[in-house]
Image 1 (cartoon, rainbow, N blue to C red):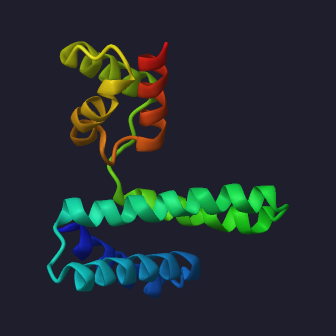
Image 2 (image 1 turned 90 degrees about the vertical axis):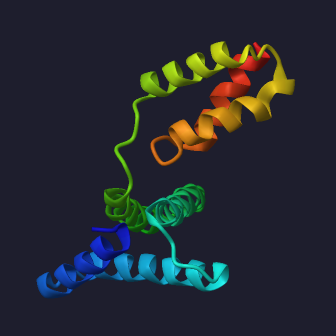
Length: 148
């Protein structure tokens, strides 16, 4: 079953169960997927659909930071709920230790020694970690390792 079909099936289940928050979040996700398909004029495969889900999770994390700074904990909590729903459609996240191990492995493979190799290292890491780790945290980790 494709990821889009699973989302569509989960929308039906949420409707039957009367789960309003889950239904709203899944409909928003489906709308984002359809919009991407319209923009790209192509059917999205599971990997591309996963990228849409990751982007939505990242947007919600940014919103949480803004709501927290603005003193709106109730809005931040709502965004947290949406993240929990969306993360069900992403592969299991790697632990910090696992991410560090992959970064160290790629740094050793590439022989990167300074910041000029940042792009090369990230290019090697992206296919290994995409969807399984927060790439902004990975980037910060690589930057720290290359700088110091």
